[in-house]
Length: 124
Image (cartoon, rainbow, N blue to C red; front, side, top):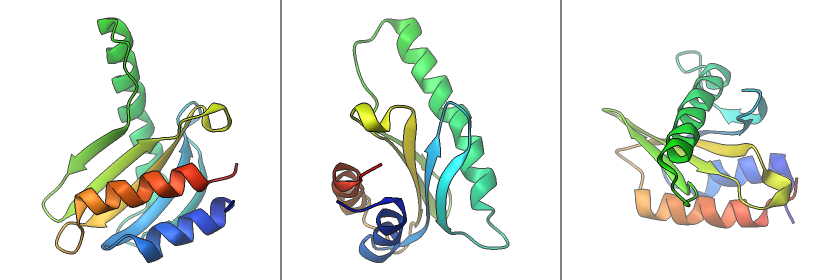
């Protein structure tokens, strides 16, 4: 089973249009690992900021009394997709993958499929 570094590399190499990837702890807001980004796009800041998105959605689901789990959260920008995938299973509690995609090069359905596969193979 791939470790964190291998999984992040696979995100960027196997998902068309992927420009950055991180594994984030949404309880602390800290990125456990990052790959990609640029001077114009601080991946650490983006990963930490998206913990607020995850926390807000989890609170909303709880307040609504829904017996559902989040698979993905998708944020679409003019030129990017930001895909947040909560890690399932006991070893991934409180963690999510954060993937940034160039919307002009990405196939969103395939990106979701590949990220799900990478998640299932991840060993934490």
